[in-house]
Image (tube, rainbow, N blue to C red):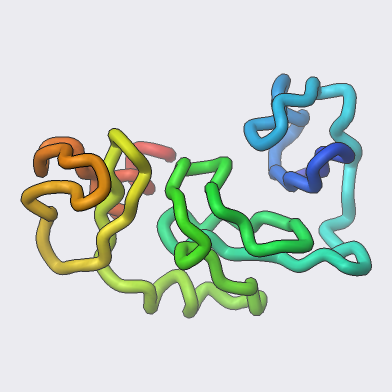
Length: 131
C-alpha cells in the first residue's frame, strides 16, 4: 500500500491515491506527496488508542483526523507495535462530542455533552464499520 503525506500539516495516509481533501487541514490532494514512511526530523508518530490511526506531527494531537476522538490522552507515542492499541481497554466514543470513555459497559450519559447512551459507539463497532 502506498503512503501519502500532506505537505501542509504532516497528515500521513495509506491508499492507492491521496484523498481529495486532507481531513486535518482541508488542503487539496495536490499537496500530498508520496512518502516512504520515514519520520522527518523533529516529528513524532502518535497512535490513536481508539482507532489505531498513526499521525505524524511534532506535538501530541488533540483530535484524531480518522475517528474524530478528542483529547491528548487518546494519543501515545507510537513505538512500532500494536500492543499499545490492544492494551487500551474497552472504549466507547460519544458520537455527539467525540469524548471517549474507557469502561466495560456503554456509559449511560456523556459527562461532557449530556448525550444519552444511544450516542455512544464502541471501539470494536467503529472498527468493524470502517472496513
